[in-house]
Length: 246
Image (cartoon, rainbow, N blue to C red; front, side, top):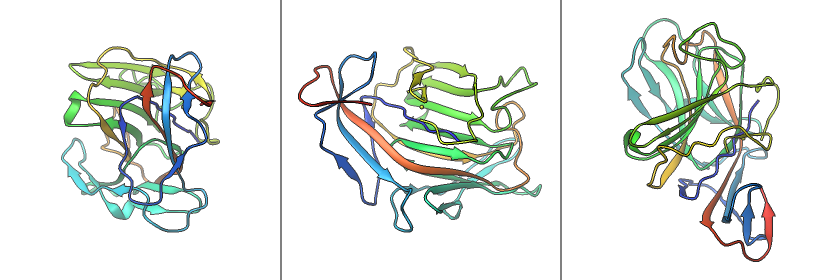
């Protein structure tokens, strides 16, 4: 199971429920990075049994070989997590998928092949987007030249910059902490095609059956579990007051 911690100085958050804003530290710093962040905002689903802490999205995307529908009914509060479900596909119609708008989060998924688990900063098409995606069919190995094994990190601005990060462990086995970091170790730093406008974080799980991307669709339900949401914002080049290392 994987945890993602993607940190940028221009994040926006769309949250409807109770949001906890930490005030114990004046500046949150990252080893090897100059400056820091002045605010930490978090939501913990591990003890949640009800409520509405994120925005559930509902819309249709025409795609090939299968279209997909993001439906609110595929988003639910489970046992200690917010759950995003891709429903088992039975051969006709659209693939029922799930998407929420949040900040940043710790998440894990079941090992059902044929699903794209993604989180991304997004605003106004591909001109301002940062992606981190896991393809459950090719997480650890792949026999397809068009889809190397590993996770994918991408910047979109004027054009696209992409890097694939091989996993040295099974990410479905436990929760892990990821700027493109995995368990505190930086795996990727993309410095080209960096977006310039603020955007919300969007988290989704979906499939379109594309053999060179998601594969699938899944033949049984696949559920991505979101344990908590954590965001650092308000970048400053000057570190002041009490500092806390992220």
